[in-house]
Length: 111
Length: 116
Image (tube, rainbow over all chains, first blue to last red; front, side, top):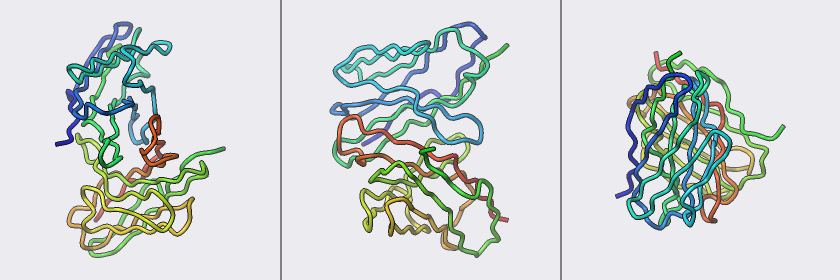
């Protein structure tokens, strides 16, 4: 079935790197997404990666894609307290065109 | 400013009443979506609409209804049949409804519904 899995919590110290992991199921997904949700707010698109890429870098964000293992990760360099939020990965189901979201990883940055 | 607006931000309802949540977008997107988010859980799809005057049930449509009479608007009604309606509701839109590679969803700020 369609299921995107993420670990629920991650805690890091300010200035360290954060790595948020995601496992997806649809091997034919052409784009994979990372969203950020701050408390009480909607989801904000952070970045996305095309499936023919292994890596995409955007300022402090690095996305790594391992298609063989269906594993996606988001690395945040020099993590700041403002990065504390819930991070969702998402894919589009090739059969139904529905967006499938992971359960979200709550990142807590300790000062 | 282009974007998606949801109103109200907070909504209180007595048990047994229907209530309608508003979602408007001026992004000229064809597709619109409603999700429900409960604490510690991901997003669950309630209804979606790929085009005006057409919509489909998502994974948890029971107790909800929608309409899509205009491209810009996709209101969600939470009926009294919804057994546990207290949640955070998110509306989203996308240009092509996921049918074109690179299609991306954009989200509104959400409405928190509390049933008293």
